[in-house]
Length: 106
Ligand SMILES: [Zn+2]
Image (tube, rainbow, N blue to C red; front, top):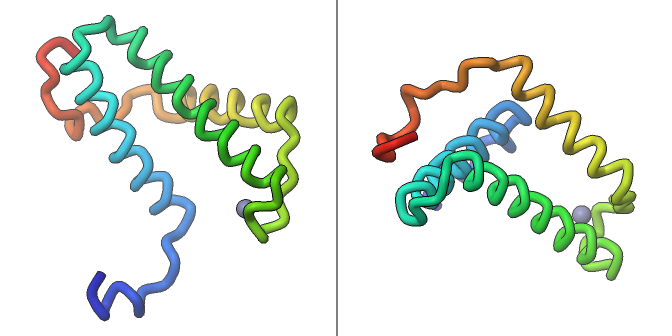
């Protein structure tokens, strides 16, 4: 981190989404290439990994490990995540494939 980084404002939700998309796309492409598994299976594993992240973060909050005040509500939270997945698909039917590194068979 440079001094300039500390002076920048916190990233917006849009910038945070963009950062996460880049990170997930990179991990997805690497997993697809390294595993040789079918594309849809790797996508499902990606969704399961996100579910795991949810479970771990929720558990940490249930234990009082974060002072932010969020109270996990698994049923409602999972529904919210499912809606977000559906919304992302319907609002951007063509993901920016130009950013996707060539994975050989993606
Ligand atoms: Zn928190």
